[in-house]
Length: 310
Ligand code: AVJ
Image 1 (cartoon, rainbow, N blue to C red):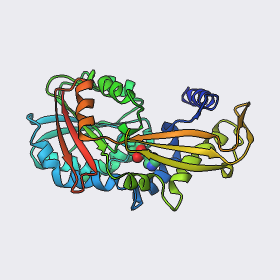
Image 2 (tube, rainbow, N blue to C red; image 1 turned 60 degrees about the vertical axis):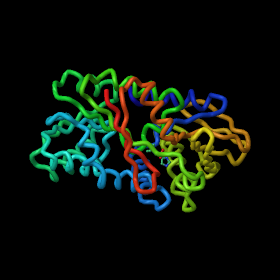
Image 3 (cartoon, rainbow, N blue to C red; image 1 turned 180 degrees about the vertical axis):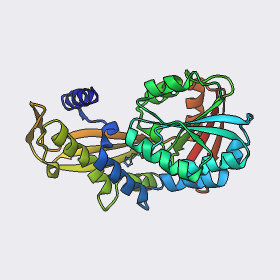
Image 4 (cartoon, rainbow, N blue to C red; image 1 turned 120 degrees about the vertical axis):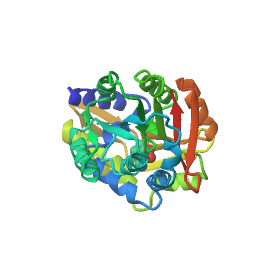
């Protein structure tokens, strides 16, 4: 089932003009491990900045939460390492919390539960595996007020209006008294952004090429990844980082029984990573239907944790 929509999306994308592959498919086992390498890169400032905000400003965020009990729901929770800082601050402030990590991967949730459970033995952890539709449906009937976390600038992968649609969609599962905490990467000097997505060691290139390896493995493909180059760009006017693979030759590739032809220098659009100004974040909040916003930045003002009230 999951594999079917993978095949459909990949074939649709490769038959589109321009050709398109989707970054949500980057994260097989190998891809997730390359993403861990990216997070360690000096030039990939995002996790460092977000961690700084969580470490230094969680108490200010928590001061805005009036209730004494919350369900902390984390979308795309992953391994939960950064989240421990926020959970710790919540517990230190005397609030009673339950932690509900949601993720598409049951394996990462198992790991998350162990890491967080070891750190906070008294915490109730209720992992829910599945896509956002299924998992949010399960949290809806719970009576506790909620704070939904969507961190790591994952919002940046949604194109244009899709980001607003996603926030609106999440808001439907919330009610009066609930909050949404968004991690968003801010507009900054274009060189700084470009370096984060165009590293000299080629780690980001490997991250992109890994999807071709994955297609080879899972869809009987015969991509030669060496015949593709990686190209990243950032447009300060739109705030959009785009990353492409570029065919280094005229070539034909087989995928799931189909022949896909590439011209020399033809791009495959792989990913966008949207950057926001403060005004953009306020507009996003308004359009999604949340009533107010509060913004917390790191010392360099590279990243924002933005709290939206239902
Ligand atoms: C995981 C979506 C936040 O867009 O910055 C990192 C993925 N792509 N380097 C991002 C990514 C290239 C990352 N997100």
